[in-house]
Image 1 (cartoon, each protein chain N blue to C red):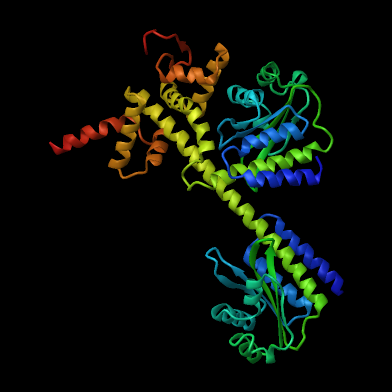
Image 2 (cartoon, chains in turn yellow, green; image 1 turned 90 degrees about the vertical axis):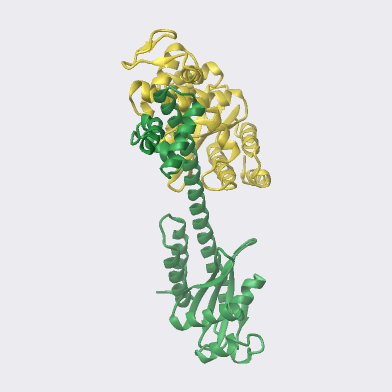
Amino acid sequence: MGGRRLDRILDFLGEVGGSDTSLDWLCGICAQELGVSGAAVALILSGHDPGAIAASDEVAAAVVDLQFSTGEGPAIDAHRSRRAVLERDLSSSTRWPAFAPEAVAAGAAAVFALPLQVGAARFGVLILYRDRPGPLGEGVLTDALAMAEVACEITLGLQAQVPPGSLHEVLDRLADKRTELYQATGMVVVQLDVGPEEAVAAIRARAYATDRPVGEVAADVVARRFRFDQDGTVAPPGSPQP
Amino acid sequence: MARETLIARTFVELADTLVEGYDPLEFLHHLAERCVEVLGMAEAGLVLVDARGQLQALASSSERMHLIELLEVQHEDGPCLDCWRSGGAVAEDHLVGATGRWPHFAPAAVEAGFASAYAVPMRLRDERLGALNLFANETSGLADTDLVLAQAIADVATIGILHERFIARREEVTEQLQVAFHTRVVLEQAKGVVAEAAKVDMDQAFSLLRGYARHHNLLLSEVARRVIDREVAADALVIQPRSRSGRRR
């Protein structure tokens, strides 16, 4: 997009940078300027799964959600490796056997993930997707990395507005959306006598096996419509409790 | 070493501050020493504004220099103060005649053996960090062209310092973001543990956690962490009030 155009975008985002909708703006600009169909900003915090805090459209949001439910995908890899993960053709990729077909079905043919990081710290990913396969355009990776920097800046700028110990509203919304999953995790920790990570894995496996969203399985656990037996097998609702 | 080589090396060293893991104070001392060498000054010193907006004499090429800078900051007169206020370079080729300009600084500097004094601002656009002070033993100790060079050194150093502060601040906020998010996650998980173990609903689970925290004078987040880490059995939260009333009887 050229240095001067990028500068103007950065100036513009600098003006709206402190507001709750800045990240949504950023995702929209990414979609317009980077030759992709859409973008999302996802948080990935200390071992927790990706969750979108902004998205340009529903497909972009789905690309994040699917990585959350399958536990794999470019965002997770980019976060782990601290490097950009570029997948120009999801349909022919074997990297993410659970995520890729679902992402394609949701409307994403190519996905690009750029880590949000500051020095030694990292906290999320900027995700770009396109509805047609193909690489990022020439020179676009540099611009995309610059947009990831801006996403980083805006996210931390929001968090810097609130006192330590609390979460900015935009980020808090993600925690709110996941509340039932965290509560269900705690319940499954007791039911299966395992740690939280294994409990989440069990909930996720159940969602995958029954082809339902993770959030629905979590809601069933919290409402005690469903519980995980000690041996890991599934007790249908209404069956005698162990 | 040829002067050009020394100048080039100085700029490379300053640019190295963009790399992680440098000590800001050591950097400033190094900068002061290099200014003396490259610009052929008697002494150099850096005065930077601190978090409360107060100027601090942070690094000097010698103790003699440091004392004069302290005096500048204390009495709020001198080239560095003028430079800081105006945001532009300050030059005084003849300190002996400058008592009218700087009543405290000029006599003290002459007494210490200096004959001329200069200061260039350390600033990037609106952000003013402080000033670089340069003192010479002879009058007119810094040529105009060298004042330009001094400003270039100050500019590179300014960018290095701002960059370091910027990264440090962002790392700090990232840490706060992670801690705050993790605290929320762990609290909800702990509610789930208690709800399941004690067969209560989420609100009651939260009350039990809070009750335990109050009784043991612990932070709620700490109790939640202990529950999740199995350091506190979920049952203990329920049994706690009963055993208390038992003792009272």
